[in-house]
Length: 142
Image (cartoon, one colour):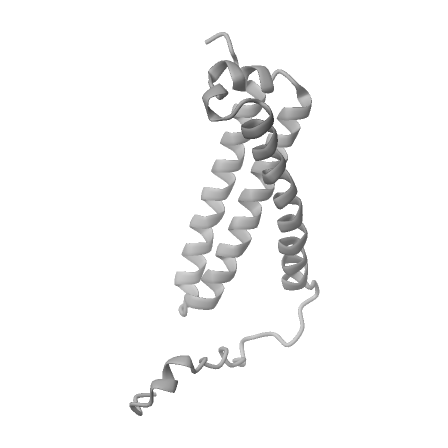
């Protein structure tokens, strides 16, 4: 697109063409379910994050009140453990699904796509498991 026309900067490249190896139909509609998950988890995350910020920063005295004892007091309640656990899981899965889409869009080689998505899966599982472990095994008597 090197015509020298400034309008060429706004031209969108066409999507990758379907190859002979690309199946026409799949048994599950994974991409539609992933799309739906992004929308629903985004709505739930907005409520969870804004509620978290409102309660912790405005109603409980602001950032100056947040300390080790504050977190210990919060995580003594199963309600706050559940709130933070849901926020962690949804945020990580939402972000990983978005990164998976970016990898599918921009990684051109199948091997590159496989490695990047493998690393993404390992990082996501590690973070979710470690975060879950911290929430449920938090000991305020350290």
